[in-house]
Image 1 (cartoon, helix red, strand yellow):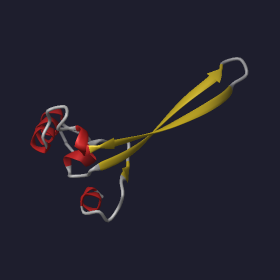
Image 2 (image 1 turned 135 degrees about the vertical axis):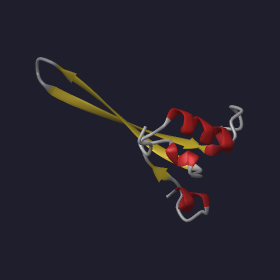
Image 3 (image 1 turned 90 degrees about the vertical axis):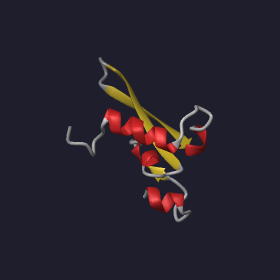
Length: 82
Protein backbone atom coordinates (compact mmCIF):
# COMPACT_ATOMS: atom_id res chain seq x y z
CA UNK A 1 0.00 0.00 0.00
CA UNK A 2 2.93 2.32 0.64
CA UNK A 3 4.02 1.80 -2.97
CA UNK A 4 0.53 2.56 -4.27
CA UNK A 5 0.32 5.71 -2.11
CA UNK A 6 3.78 6.90 -3.17
CA UNK A 7 2.85 6.48 -6.85
CA UNK A 8 -0.54 8.21 -6.59
CA UNK A 9 -2.68 5.11 -7.07
CA UNK A 10 -4.39 5.66 -3.70
CA UNK A 11 -4.83 8.89 -1.74
CA UNK A 12 -3.80 7.52 1.65
CA UNK A 13 -3.38 4.48 3.85
CA UNK A 14 -5.79 3.83 6.71
CA UNK A 15 -3.70 2.13 9.36
CA UNK A 16 -2.94 2.17 13.05
CA UNK A 17 0.71 1.49 12.23
CA UNK A 18 3.15 4.21 11.24
CA UNK A 19 5.48 1.71 9.56
CA UNK A 20 3.85 2.71 6.28
CA UNK A 21 6.05 5.83 6.35
CA UNK A 22 9.17 3.66 6.61
CA UNK A 23 8.10 1.73 3.52
CA UNK A 24 7.50 4.92 1.51
CA UNK A 25 3.88 5.90 2.22
CA UNK A 26 3.08 9.62 2.05
CA UNK A 27 -0.28 9.88 3.87
CA UNK A 28 -1.53 7.79 6.78
CA UNK A 29 -5.11 8.09 8.03
CA UNK A 30 -5.61 6.89 11.58
CA UNK A 31 -8.82 6.47 13.55
CA UNK A 32 -8.63 6.91 17.31
CA UNK A 33 -11.57 5.46 19.18
CA UNK A 34 -12.10 6.21 22.84
CA UNK A 35 -14.72 4.69 25.08
CA UNK A 36 -16.39 6.56 27.92
CA UNK A 37 -18.89 4.86 30.14
CA UNK A 38 -20.71 4.90 33.39
CA UNK A 39 -19.74 1.99 35.62
CA UNK A 40 -23.19 1.81 37.25
CA UNK A 41 -25.29 1.88 34.11
CA UNK A 42 -22.80 -0.15 32.05
CA UNK A 43 -23.57 2.10 29.08
CA UNK A 44 -20.59 2.91 26.92
CA UNK A 45 -20.26 5.94 24.70
CA UNK A 46 -17.79 5.66 21.82
CA UNK A 47 -16.08 8.67 20.34
CA UNK A 48 -14.10 8.54 17.13
CA UNK A 49 -11.48 10.95 15.84
CA UNK A 50 -9.74 10.81 12.47
CA UNK A 51 -6.14 12.05 12.18
CA UNK A 52 -4.20 12.50 8.95
CA UNK A 53 -0.41 12.34 9.02
CA UNK A 54 1.78 13.37 6.08
CA UNK A 55 5.38 12.44 5.35
CA UNK A 56 6.08 16.09 4.50
CA UNK A 57 6.04 16.75 8.27
CA UNK A 58 9.24 14.80 8.86
CA UNK A 59 11.73 17.25 7.30
CA UNK A 60 10.32 19.92 9.65
CA UNK A 61 11.28 17.62 12.52
CA UNK A 62 14.73 17.13 11.03
CA UNK A 63 14.08 13.50 10.05
CA UNK A 64 14.90 12.12 6.63
CA UNK A 65 13.51 8.85 5.26
CA UNK A 66 16.86 7.27 6.07
CA UNK A 67 16.52 8.43 9.68
CA UNK A 68 13.04 6.86 9.86
CA UNK A 69 14.42 3.58 8.55
CA UNK A 70 17.22 3.67 11.14
CA UNK A 71 14.75 4.36 13.96
CA UNK A 72 12.55 1.48 12.74
CA UNK A 73 15.51 -0.90 12.64
CA UNK A 74 16.68 0.06 16.13
CA UNK A 75 13.20 0.03 17.68
CA UNK A 76 12.00 -3.12 15.95
CA UNK A 77 8.38 -3.65 15.03
CA UNK A 78 5.67 -6.18 14.35
CA UNK A 79 7.61 -7.37 11.29
CA UNK A 80 10.69 -8.11 13.41
CA UNK A 81 11.27 -11.46 15.19
CA UNK A 82 13.57 -9.99 17.86
